[in-house]
Length: 102
Image (tube, rainbow, N blue to C red; front, side):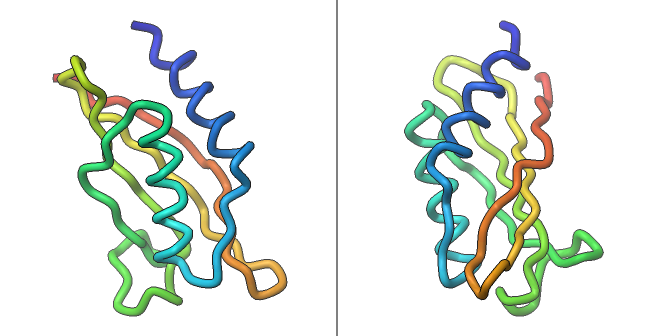
C-alpha cells in the first residue's frame, strides 16, 4: 500500500475539519474523531511539551502524537501535530506522519 497517498487523504480530512478547541484535550479529541472518520483507530495519544516529553499540565502541550491502527493493517501509523494557540484558541498544525512496519 502507498502510505504517502493514504496519509495525504488523512491530512486533508483533518485540515478540512479545522479542529479548534478551548483546551488541548478537546483539540486531541477532535483530531482523534477525524482519524476515526478516516478509518483509523487511535491506540496511544500523547500531549507533549516543547522538549517532546509528556506534559505535566495540559496547557503545556506544544505537540500531539497519535499512534493509530487501521483494520487489516498490522503496521502502526503515527501522526504528529504542533499545538498552536492563536487568540486563546487551541489549533493543530499537521507536522508529519510515519509508519512503523511490522
